[in-house]
Length: 183
Image (tube, rainbow, N blue to C red; front, side, top):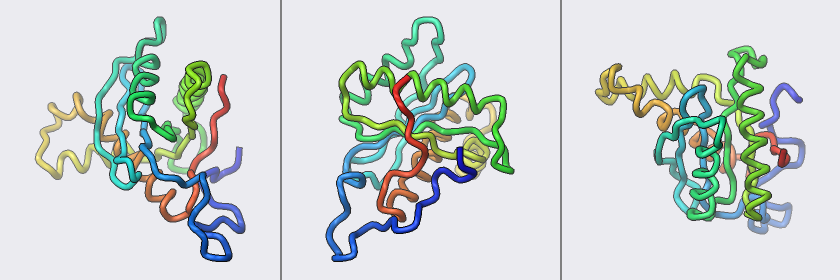
């Protein structure tokens, strides 16, 4: 995998040389952000114009029955999401961490379930360095006590992941991150 899979390649632009509107890869529609943890999965969603990220819910991880993934499929279908960004936990230096493969596996399972459900939603892995740290900092700044953060930190981290992806998408004119093939 490249050191920076989210960076645009030469020639990537929001509009064509003739000034035409962006192509179908940047079409409007809801995007979801997912923060995968050992025990919980945080979820955030954008508005239909893919401009603003808001927290949705925290799901309990269920590796045995996959009820968390099943719930995500329901949400993707109900919201008609066009893309899902799964946070990829890398170290500050950009190297893989013990959690990196778990996030890749989760994203692959989700992509497989999306394919099985015949949904037209793409899954991308997006760098999430410091998303939880940033979310916790913002929660403290807004007056949320540390003891009360646990119930909302996963959603806040998902908002950070989605906001980062939406900003990159707006800047580059295409979906950021590394596409995840169905497992």
